[in-house]
Amino acid sequence: RLEDRCREVSDQRHADLAALQARLDSAEFQVAHRERLSEESDQARSTAAQMVKERTGMLEEQLQDLQGLLRSERAKSAKVASLESELENLKDSYKRERTRSSQFQDQEAEVALIKAELETISAQESSKDAHLAALSAELEAQGVQLADRDAEVAQLGADLVRAERA
Image 1 (cartoon, one colour):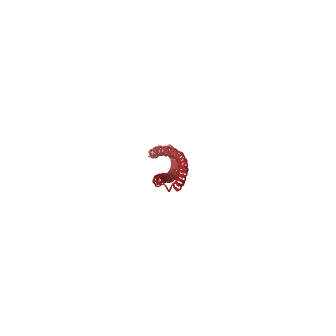
Image 2: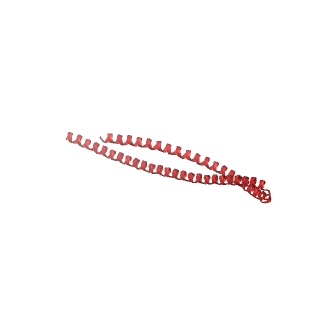
Image 3: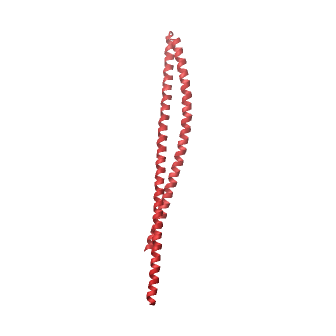
């Protein structure tokens, strides 16, 4: 019975180890995937931020130029209406660019959440490793108990042989 129990515990330990390895492999894949997504997001955010900065600078220059033209051409009413319309379009473009900048900040917050989730997964894996070590220690202790019982059985067998001879 004890050997059967040890075999069951050993089989269960192997099954647990295989399950934990599969979960670890899955977590490592998720971590690598998320790191790649994070790197791609960082690169895209950096590129987009640079484009937004350049575009914002151009738009600000254009806005200032148009405001100067508007002041100098205010006397010409037909021209004024056209310039005001163009100025409004530039303002809208500027607002859209600022909105995009805000969206990139939202993406940075999302990246921070993903990194926190990755840290949580890593902590869970560490906890699983500790649990696995505890299971291994328990299995070793049961092995020692089994060896002690085997020694007792051998001693009882020897005592029985001596008793039968006597």
